[in-house]
Image (cartoon, rainbow, N blue to C red; front, side, top):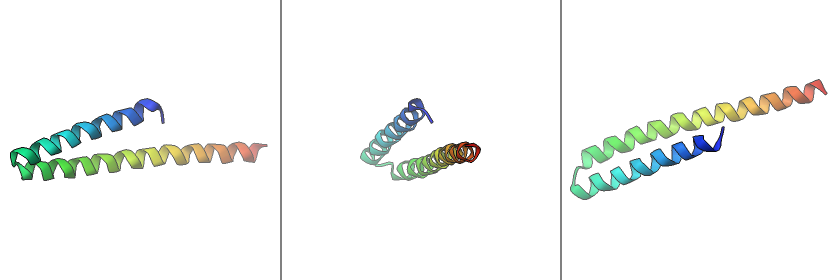
Length: 68
């Protein structure tokens, strides 16, 4: 996981948050809810990907300890 991955997720989160506020202000609550649902799925997928990378690093570390 690199800084660019974290910045990408943060950027997408900011854009979705701004669109959510915009749709709430103009009264399009159904678009706002749909956008919230898509954002929730996206962030969940990214967190699962980050966890997979994290546990791969932990596995590599324990394999390195086993070799020593």
